[in-house]
Length: 130
Length: 172
Image (cartoon, rainbow over all chains, first blue to last red; front, side):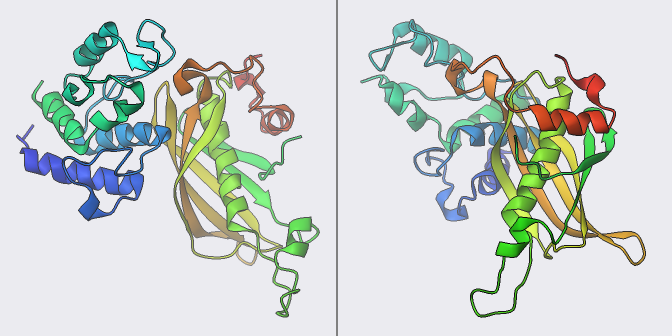
């Protein structure tokens, strides 16, 4: 497979997001958050995942790109905050995501803030070089 | 009773493709209201585009449901794109052809073509394309639980499947 540059990955991810979310091209920047800035809803994450699979000819397992069923586990979320165990699991399962923004207050409702366009680009870059 | 917007399944390829038809009759109530001429213009019976989408959603929903033998609760989660280039009107037969594009435990994406039968020569003319996404309810929404009973594929869905000889695909 030909080596694909980070810029090329970004361009393709941008196409996917414009298509899946109806996002305007100028809004899809590296630091844009999928939910807050681009308006993604829960089903859109599956749509994005399917479209990335097609675009890059890869297989993405459920829970590999975005976290799943986190909120229903009491050992992971307590009083609306992510536990140490949750942070550990998230870092291990989703190495393409920068969780440092969450470290100070660990509010679970701010989890969506770490899923940015850049996290998708990082994910694809890791996946293609694996 | 679920409001059905397909009359019959005419073709089925397991796990990949399903075709259903809907005959449009001027006796259907929706054509008396949409549009009834109360706006001063002549009556103009047209099937609402949203119901054409529903017909495709039922066609593609059955296809997606059949993959897991209708054990999963398959619900329409996203209308990804709709393009309807011509109206559907009484006297026509509408054909919905759905194919699965992608599918996993969480859900599926489907592509769909809508066509209309030309009664003069028996040919089909494409009048639209509808792409959809379905969610497997029990595998989503953070583990929230739903009733055991599969309320999605209920009585009249079953009747359509039986008529098409597809009842073997239903796990009770």
